[in-house]
Figure 1 (tube, rainbow, N blue to C red):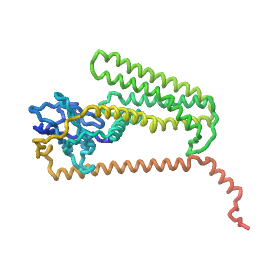
Figure 2 (cartoon, rainbow, N blue to C red):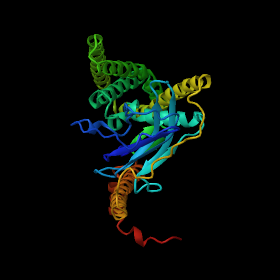
Figure 3 (cartoon, rainbow, N blue to C red):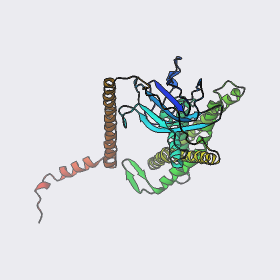
Figure 4 (cartoon, one colour):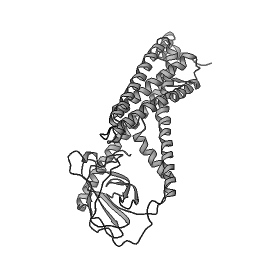
Length: 397
């Protein structure tokens, strides 16, 4: 879920239990094209491993990467190991960076088994942060998981539908009563309490349309992954989503143009302010709150399920220990060179981010300070000075 949290490096792991250990397992596949989809940001990668001997109750997992590729830094959330025969499940929580330039600078870690205690607040925050990149309609246009079949074109089209339908909803409110008193002016934009309430109401009105279209897209793309008999029906879900999307955009754009023809400058500025409020509310409030309550609901179900069934058997005395060999043989001098190289890249990236934030702040400050000034102030000052050429000689009595 974090930026650049996927890795291009080669990943290996070793699982050890009470009886045996698996040995070092290379997780990167050699099949062409498959490696591009492994260990990307937001991914949940599933591997099926076969061992020759029973390893018993799993006690720990050693995992790491070789720091290769253009972006080797990797953020690992957790590892879940499932025994398909005994149906037992073990969860190893990491929530740490495997990177030379981040945190403690380690690229190999040993994750040990801890007693099963579900941290409800942590589970909610984790699901919420992950949901922001997957289901937040605005953020996911840029940050969507690579494996998601809900494409960026479909997500961007949903964003366009939100904007156009919000324009129409705001226009209908101003058609009912176009009068609004000015309360505060920020740069070129004028706001009043009525404009704020109109923006909020419009955003709430168009939310069901957006939820319906997004739901149809998600269901259609999820079900067409497998070549089943239901794929034909689910393709029609995508066609239906495009139909609703096209109708909402066409109708909203047409009626918004008709409304704008009968407005003056004042009403147009007020409508633009309400439209801006609707957009900000949808990005910062409506979508995050929707994702949060979804995460809260799923975490509550998981907690209730775990309270009824034990996730795994308690800790046992292990006869084996992780092997003393490193997952990857890398010289210390090479590690230091990699660390310095990655640190330089991170510092350069941070520098450009800070410059962008500073320039954005300066631009907004100039808009707020100078955007509301009268355009004729120079002519007024010049005319006064020309009319009173010797005004500087006047002295106070």
